[in-house]
Image (tube, rainbow over all chains, first blue to last red; front, top):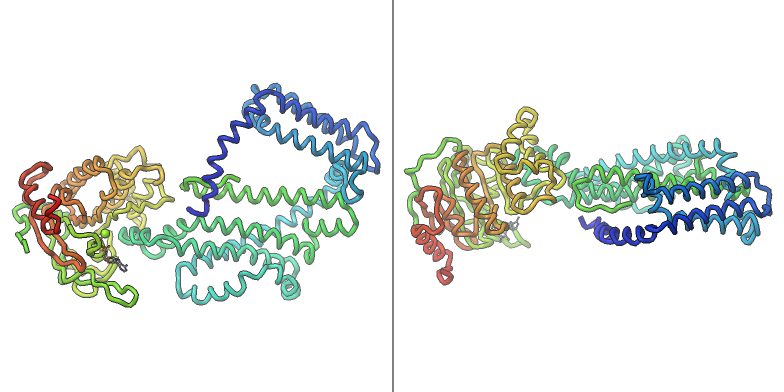
Length: 338
Length: 265
Ligand SMILES: Nc1ncnc2c1ncn2[C@@H]1O[C@H](COP(=O)(O)OP(=O)(O)O)[C@@H](O)[C@H]1O
Ligand SMILES: [Mg+2]
C-alpha cells in the first residue's frame, strides 16, 4: 500500500532510537535529573513570592515535590516495578525536559514577570482553572464531544456509503461526481453563515457542517479505494460463485478499507477545525465557545487550560481511530504507529 | 498438422465434465483497432481428461481460459460444459490464475472458504475447508495471512480455494510459473495425485513443455496470435511419469519443433 510508505521508514528508525534511549537512561542519571528538575519547580513555586495574586501556588509547589519524589522512587526501583518501571525509564528524558520547562515557565511568569502578564499566565493560574472552573469546563468538554461525535458519525457514514456507491456504480457516479467536485473542495466553514439561518438550531447547523467536513474526504478516499480494487479479485470471486452483493461487501469494501481510514483521518482533522469555529460563532456551548468566552473576559489562563484539554481530546480521538484501524487491518504488513 | 486421437482407452471417473469448445473466435478492441486473439478454435475435452495448452506468449491462452471460465463471452462460437452452453462464471468451473490472487485481508482458512461462503453453503460445509487445507498440507497455516506465506504456499492456498468447490472442470493458468524448480516439481506430482483422486477435467496452460508432458493426457499446441490449434498430441503414458522417459523426450522434441524452437534442443 503506497499510502503507508511512511511506516517502513519509522519501523527502520525505531530500533535505533530505542537503543540510544536505553543507553541514556541505563544509568540512573536521567531519572535523577528529572526528579531534580521537578524538585526545582516545586521549590521555585514555594521560595519566591508571586508577583500576582494566585491561590494555588502552594499546592502546585507541594504537588511538584511529590512528583519529584515519585520519579526518584521510580528511578531507583524501576527494576522491581515491571512494566511501569520500564515505561518510566523510557520517559525519563521527557520528564526532565518537561520539569525544566515548567520551572522556567514558573520563574518567567509568576516570580520575575519576564513575560508580560496577563497574556502569559503562570502554571498555578492554569491549575486554578482546572480546580475552580471545573464544572463549566467539563460541560464544555461534553458539549464538544457530543457535537463532534454526532456530526462525525453522520458524515463518515454518509461519506462511506456515497464513496462505495460511486466507486461501484457508474450511474451513481454520473450524478454524484459533478456535485462532489463542485461542493467538496469548498471549506465547510464557508457554509457557516448560511447554515446558521437555514437550519432550525445552531446545533443542527453545526452538526451538518461537521458532517460535511468529514464526509468529503471520506467519500473521495472510499471512492478511490473501491475504484482501485484489482479486477483480478473480482474475477476470482466471480468464478467461485460470488453474486454482486458479495463482490461489494466482501471484496470491494475490505479491499478499500485502508483508503477509507485515510479518509477518516483527514475528515477528523478538518471536522475539528469546523467544530471549534462553529462553537465560537454559533453554538453557545463547547470548548470553542469556552475559548471565546474566556477571551471576552481576558481570562487568559482559562484559554490555555481549554487549549490543553482540547489538544488532549483531539489527540485522544486520533489515537482511538488508529487503534480501530490497527485492529481492523491486522492483515496489513506495516502500518504507521501513532 | 499433427493430430492423433486422444487416449480414449483410458477410463476416467465420472466426476469431471465434458468441455466442448466449438468454433470459438475472439478479439479485443485496442485504440479502435481490432486485435484478433483466437481464430476458430475447436476442441472437445472428455470428462476427467487432463489437457495441457502450450503456445507462444501472448497468443491467447489466457483469453481462452477466461472464455471457458465464463468471465468473457466469445465473439463467435460456443463453449459448452456437459452440453450446457457456458453463459457466465460457475463454481463447477474454477480457475487458478498464475498469480495466486489471495485476498490479503483474509486468513488462509477464510481464503479457502471463499467459494462456499459466496455460494451461501459455508455454515453446513465447514469441514470441507478443513479437509482441503489438510490436503494441500497447510493445516498449521490456517490462521496465517497471505503476506506471511511463501510463493509456493500461496499457490497451494489458491489451489485449495479452487478444489474446495469440488469443480467439474479445473482451469489452471500457468499456476506453477512463478515457483522455483523444486517447489514446482513437488507441486506437479501433488497436482497429478489430486487429479487422479478427484477425477475432475483439467485444462492447464503452461509454457513449460516438460511440465505439459509429465502432467497431461493430451497436449494442444497453439499457433502465434491469433491462436489456432496447431497440433493435438496424445501422451499415452501411465503415471507417475519419469522425466527421462525416451517416449516423452521424443514428444518434447516434436513439440519444440512445432513451437519453432528446434534450435534449442
Ligand atoms: N482485456 C483485454 N483487452 C485488450 N487486449 C487484451 C485483453 N486481454 C488480453 N489482450 C491481448 O490479447 C492477447 C492475448 O493475451 P493472453 O490471452 O493473455 O495471452 P497468453 O497466451 O500469453 O495468455 C495479448 O496480445 C493481449 O495483449
Ligand atoms: Mg497468460
